[in-house]
Length: 161
Image (tube, rainbow, N blue to C red; front, side, top):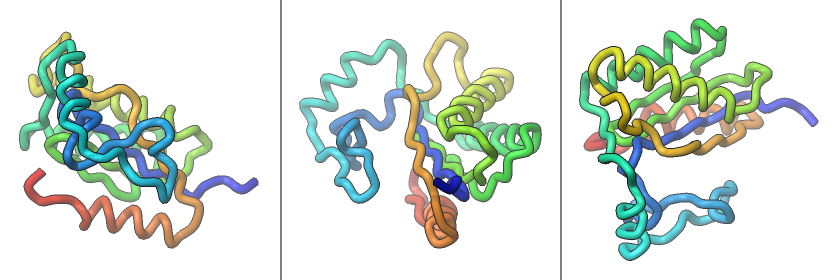
């Protein structure tokens, strides 16, 4: 088995993209490449909202800059090749070259460093959750999939979010 070339890592801000959301969401059984996302479900979305234990966390423009800088700084520190990043108001996309680690480890480190920097900058309240648990970790096995992921991250995002 060969190693992947890179990973597409995606995670959302706490409470801003719940299961049942009109944009769709993923869950076990609905997260493999080529499978559909969960369909919109207002009842499920309301159920998820009631389960929340802190307010939704949305990134302001200054907070988005803090996260972008934290991603770049952490990648440099760990000597990871950051191929693309896009920080949105309610989620983050990163394309990072394979560095001998599982993508879950890289995702967890990025989230931790971003949270630390957001709190230092006063852009995230201590005690409130910043991110949802885990995130999406897609393996990119060939140059075509890496290039497609980079294009999606850089060019394929809704300008309004």
